[in-house]
Image 1 (tube, rainbow, N blue to C red):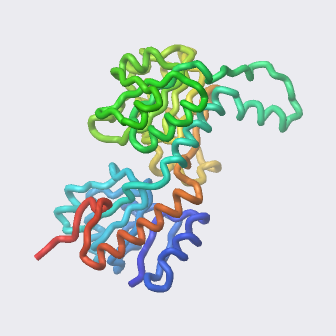
Image 2: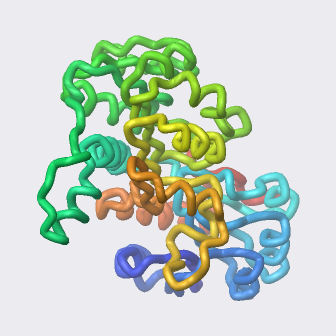
Length: 333
């Protein structure tokens, strides 16, 4: 049975082809699944999608009408899938509930240190043989306070790195993580965390309850000289409110690997096109802001685990099994 995979990068394709092997022939496309591309899936029982796929009602109905019965998403998040409609259509849906938390945690720290030590600005200058230090002064992380919003596997990995820097650890989550407590983390309210921290890093999923978790009021509670990092989901931050705060001269640095309107932009080359998103256009002009294109997970280790789990999810579907990765099981009867 041939499987159709949308949104496959050039780096991913050989790994996916090797993992699926001869037992499951694989057709890889670099385009993302959307209303425009859904007709390509006609005749494919199993479709694999990336995190930037748009699986709204129209897309799901087009897939079902074309014969698709199983969607294997290659990500942990699934806020891009209309699960209610998928259930109605009898579609089996799976995700990757776990992969290397170190990939994202380490990248979040990469963003934090890059904006703190002005690495991008320094690199751009030295390419022009400008070796002045003006405007490049950063701060020691040692002895400062870090706030970890969401202390699951990724947040805990981020916390262990912060502990290595010798930072005071504050956390916010619906449950306390014993591993973080053992490192000396103190759990506080979100408002207390935002007001006290020199660095705030977000590691919670995007749910209705966490949408714009950092809204205008929350951003105003942060220190003027704070660093903000988001490597989770763009919708956690009210980007318009963030731009307003940046225009007011606030924040030492902001590192964003995600953006709430990234669909249709991230993972694509838009360099020769007019920028239609005014908010994103303004965001990248601030000298203390670093935006990357949802690449925190993109290590050989993490991508390999994601692909292996996706293969296992396909095998489970074909065998009529379900696992912790199953969002919607195959209909029975």
